[in-house]
Length: 254
Image (cartoon, rainbow, N blue to C red; front, side, top):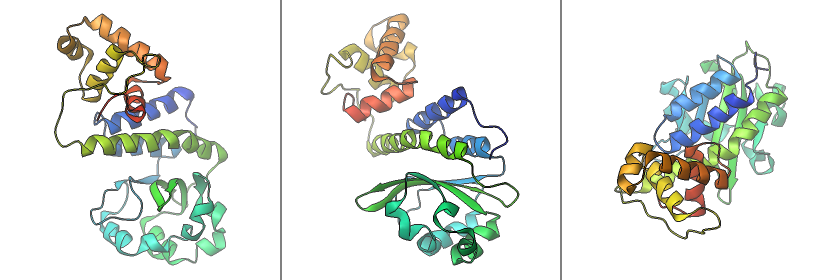
């Protein structure tokens, strides 16, 4: 178990950082570093936004030997001992809960890929769709640390759904070829008012409250009031999460 499990405020900050990364205001490696530090200072982490390695590697990694990445993509990803049981697994799990330690330590994946990098035990979050393994995250510890505890599993279980949403939002934003004027679509007045949607659309493009006020001909106080109201209606913990939710609902366009 980690020396000190994070409190509610730290977890909320981590979730907000995921949405900030999706919106380009924070880096994904910084998010992974923060998560790894919360789970144990010597942890490494890899986040795959998609499933099986693609022709262009898009994974985000911290504390991983870059020389071994091509080997992983070419071969070792297919030797992961957990792979055969993937469709039956929960969203968050520890590898040793799936494959017994004695068997895991004899695998090619462990001896030729994980152990040479100092890795010993992995904690995973996975997103499985109809095509199989989609986005997934692995956090690894060395032999110097004990096995993963239930509190650490619970932390990743809490973060996982937000991480999945943030990755989808980031993918949609990256797919936008050119910046476009913010547009509100399919606005339901009972959910978020049109002016609130306008403000969220500008936030999605990185505008500050002052810039939004100038664009919309409003005062900064009014803009902040609209954004606060939108957050409450969307049950979002931050502006970034409100934007992500609005994108998912189709209230604003990427």
